[in-house]
Structures are given as C-alpha cells and as structure tokens.
Picture (cartoon, rainbow, N blue to C red):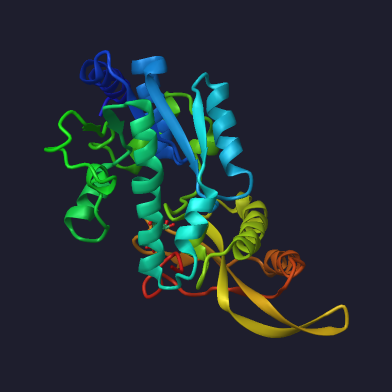
Length: 310
Ligand code: XMP
C-alpha cells in the first residue's frame, strides 16, 4: 500500500464527508487515536473537536503530557476531568467483566456522549483498525459499535455519522502512517496499553489509593525496562497481602507482580529472561513504595496466561 496516497485519500474523504459540519474524537495518546486526530485535524482544522478524558486510570502524568504534545503540534485538545465519575462507577466492583463494563459505560454514555452534545458534533471519528473489526466479528472483543455505546440509535438520531479512517489498516500500517505524519517516537513506538488502563492491572477493587500504588509501580517498571525492546512490560497489584518487615516492625503489605513479555501481535507471548541484577533493582524500588513488601516476577507465557490480569 502507498501510505502517502492513503493519507491524502483519508484527508480528502473526511473533508468531503464532514463538509461544513463539526466532528469530534476522543484521543487516548495511543497510536490509533493519535493518527486519527492528526488526519482529521488536517482535514477540518478548528472544526475538529478533540477531547482527552482523564479517567483517573491513566499512567503518571499522562493526561497533561498527551494534551501538551498535541498542542505543540498545533492541535487543540480539551482535557475532560472525569476522575470522580470513573471512581464512583468502579466503587465496590471486583469482577473483571463488571469493572470493564463500568469503564466502557462511563466513558461513552456519561462522558463522551456529553461532549458530543456540547460540541454539537454530528460526526464521530474513531480509530477502529481492521484487527478490531475482525476480532469483534469473531467474538473475541466486545461490541465495537461506538454509536450504540453512547446510546445513539442511528435510525432515531438521524444525522450522526461514524467515520473510521483506519478501518483498512493493521497496526503496522498505522505505525507507518504515524511516522509519515511526523508523530513523535513516544507515540509511534509506544508499548501497548489497554483501554481500561491501570484498572486492567488491579485485581479486586479499583480505589484511588490502589491506583496510586500501581501507578507508581508502573512508572518504575517502565523506566527500568524501557531499553529492553520487549513487546510489553507492566506492573500488577494483587488483591492479596503478605507479612513483611519494615523498619524492624511486622507489616501486612501489598504484592506487586512484574511482567515483561516478547510477542509479535499479543495473541501469544513468551516471558523475557531478564537479568537478575535488573530484577533485583526493580524489586528494591518497588518494595520501597508505601505498604508494598513483595515483588514477584511472572514467568507464565500466553497461553495459558493472558497479558493483563483483569
Ligand atoms: P490480553 O490480556 O488479552 O491482552 O492477553 C492482549 C493485548 O491487548 C491489550 N489489551 C487491551 N487493549 N483494550 C485494549 O485496547 C482492552 O480492553 C485490552 N485488554 C488487553 C493488552 O495490553 C495486550 O497488549
């Protein structure tokens, strides 16, 4: 495929479809939504309304970093602070599917639908890629129909239109387009990060305090393993406690699991044999976090394990 032609065609297409109207999209900072944002901004300029939803589940400094990065590229992004809504929706939930559902509902029905109404956008741009469509059809992924997710029945609410400019590309194609659009390496080369964000890495209830713990552990793992070239590395907070000793006193502390995997497409994965010194340094830093006194390295490939814990 000629990716330069692809870009020209998509920009022209978005222009033609939206006409003099307004379009909206949600940016996550991942490569798909970033590419959609740049393509649509080229086509529409200020008639594109891009929002970034702070769900309280993001990594350290992520919301501001992403918004700043796009502003530097001349693309305005509205930061919506929805932290309270997400934390309220997740309160008391421990079942993985219930947690994932609560996040999807809060994102689309409560937060994004409100932004759509506010901006009077009639066009929604979404970074759906070919693999998403295939996995939805095969029943591997949950419903990918964004209009249904925000409670819009296209027949009743005539006029809403969904645009999916990346629907013919796979991940490697999206990365090629991202490079041609001059997106920085911190976006094009970013390791995969799940939609439910840090909630996918907390076993049990998602609370502000538990998010703070897994966020700090994630920052340590990402710093320490950035140079490995591994496909993905992450930290998980378990719902169990273990006895430990801190400052000469017994402590019933939390347990963090570290995972570092090699993979081509995340469908299968092998575990990276990290050097002992690196594991020791990570353990030292993670067990220095408040109320964390164990750090485990997960040796399980996929299958039988999945990458995430929730
Ligand atoms: P699993 O845990 O299913 O993950 O082995 C496979 C890959 O997909 C990522 N992942 C997600 N990505 N939304 C996403 O966009 C999700 O809900 C989601 N769940 C898992 C995971 O990080 C890994 O790269």
